[in-house]
Amino acid sequence: MGRIILRLDRVMADRKMSLNDLSEKVGVSNVNLSKMKNGKISAIRFSTLEAICEALDCQPGDILEYRREET
Image (cartoon, rainbow, N blue to C red):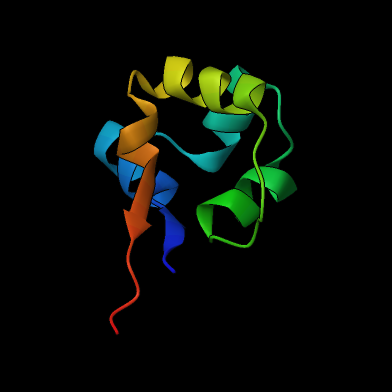
């Protein structure tokens, strides 16, 4: 079984967007975005993902990556 890896930090860095800026544009608290950025979440609402993609001008696949576990 694999796992989902969040690449929000990489996309934010590419766009030169701070956590505060993204928080204001998306309407999600800094604390929750920080957890997301650091991969400390187990779920994300589609509405939040859509807002992040809109703010960062990216696709969900730019933020989410599936990695298979090696057997």
